[in-house]
Amino acid sequence: GAVVSQHPSWVICKSGTSVKIECRSLDFQATTMFWYRQFPKQSLMLMATSNEGSKATYEQGVEKDKFLINHASLTLSTLTVTSAHPEDSSFYICSASRLAGVETQYFGPGTRLLVL
Amino acid sequence: GNSVTQMEGPVTLSEEAFLTINCTYTATGYPSLFWYVQYPGEGLQLLLKATKADDKGSNKGFEATYRKETTSFHLEKGSVQVSDSAVYFCALKGSGFGAGTRLTVKP
Image (tube, rainbow over the protein chains, first blue to last red):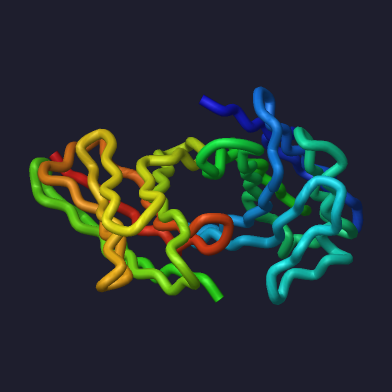
């Protein structure tokens, strides 16, 4: 099956610093990548949708200047949490949709961010 | 816009009990519907999907039928096992996820 990787798998940073999370589709080209945030009590929130070569579409309430998304190629998207604060601590998950065939989303394993 | 509404948990069942987790959707047209599962300590995995109305998705003993009359995609399993303990998410292609339903199966 399709494989999506995320790096790093976990990160601890100081408040005020920026953190970059990478999402890669390892064996297929992804037309679209999605970024989600999973809160402690299990609800999964779609943050933004990105298509290769174009600006990401952010969901209502998500600060685009806070969560910078770059989708530079058909296999790589990055999420940068800028000037991170403790309330940004969460589990961030990306997913990717295939270029061809029946579309579905393949999820990365997630990145746990802890901001001190 | 497109969205799904999922039965909230947690749900606790005894082994071999029948499981139903409700999911209803609001959408323009008939987009694909999915059920994802997240086992403890792991990432989300696709459990089953249905790409058009009246389709039935099935996997690992779980089933869900895409019903346009009731705009539903309920997840069912006839006899749950302890290993089915996980969080289950209903999802609509490219957009909404349900809030997730935590299932705990006791021996």
